[in-house]
Image (tube, rainbow, N blue to C red):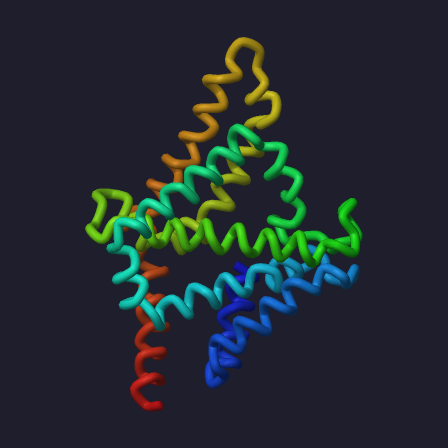
Length: 233
């Protein structure tokens, strides 16, 4: 949430600057910030810098929603998106060691000096940016135009899941030794499937309208203020 607050404040401060210029600058800063050993995980500063381009990318998509909608309707776009998603899933589950080697860069937590790659880190981070950008774009284009029961409703309330999931996770992990649970002799497969399904169930529960009221109030307030500013400009 601290990072989200940073993004909202910074984006508000540069609201009058061309968003594509801000996106380009944020990408350059994100790429080269890894050379500064002072930028670490304190106050989530490193993650805030590294992932800010994706926050801006989402805002830029809103400016081109009609074009994106038209492209996503093309069968070729659907097929290409499916192949990209399937390829990344294959790497993550079947060829995990290749994806895991990039894990320090995907987390955005560490300077380049913390890895074995060192000075070449900017190229590895660029690769991670490209991979993430393509996978995100693939998911956006692959999504169906029509509402999907349950899933579409959950998708409109991800912010409340994001806000509330951490205390739930902390409560569960304080009661269960996760590594021991996953490696229980004779129950490994069942426990691993359960470990995947429980977070899905928690996400569905936290996305219910029961938790929607306070988040929805501020979201509508922000959208109203943003629309008012755009009408005045």
